[in-house]
Image 1 (cartoon, rainbow, N blue to C red):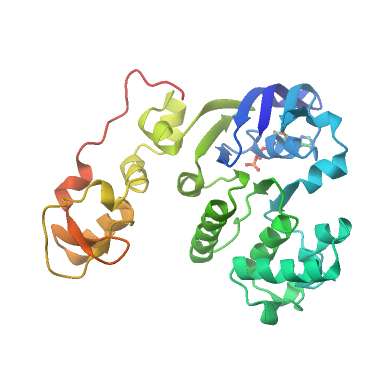
Image 2: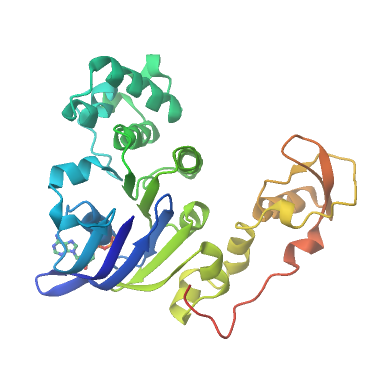
Length: 319
Ligand SMILES: Nc1ncnc2c1ncn2[C@@H]1O[C@H](COP(=O)(O)OP(=O)(O)OP(=O)(O)O)[C@@H](O)[C@H]1O
């Protein structure tokens, strides 16, 4: 869907991105993460040509992006950023309608789309349609920003720290929202973040950057279990590595299905990290488990949380 081939970008002679090659597949949720100034935002902005690359090739849907008319390209790509960038003198409905209006959609279709998106982002249309940005909380503004980016049903959604500057609860809620939207709409998403746990939660594929280059790319599990270098190992935090791995695993993977136990159950879809918290909170060794339909399906043992994890491989390789 989006391919970078040996792409570099220089600012005042200094490389912000160096010889970058990436292949972002259709429907994939890719997260760019890395040290500050490593070139994440520059990489993202080169996709919709907010920044033009100097060397190499970037293709979108098989076509070199320089061959697209910039406006056409940007309309095919939603863009949401941390500072939101809502127009302050436009209400929520007008903000969301920006691209559909440019595309000259009939008004009835625009109105229906606004309501649909507000509903998708968990905002009551009747209550929020006519409000202005200053009448919204930070989290609500971020939601409207995402709704606006999705308005014309773009093929690609580009997000630069879209949940930055939010409290952890709102941030978590919006992360769940974007996961749901991704599953529902199947759109290609490229998101930049500083937050390792956010990257691990959201990504199908993580691209870890440092100093303008890709250090390693792969699934969250591959980066955690097979870090290519000490830098990768340190980046994901040696001390928190185990907990982060637990957050990628689910109760269903460790449940002993032939056992039953009375008591307040845990759902098999919950992460092992959350299960660990529950073990500590309840001071117990075993938890009854139910499936998605609430039917008992086994027992989770505390000791099984640490079973069967592969440790960092000596032969670690990028994947
Ligand atoms: N418009 C610009 N003019 C000059 N230098 C720039 C410009 N944009 C980015 N840079 C430089 O390019 C490098 C990469 O910046 P970029 O914003 O892509 O990094 P980042 O990984 O997104 O950083 P952060 O996580 O701190 O936001 C930095 O050294 C930055 O100072």
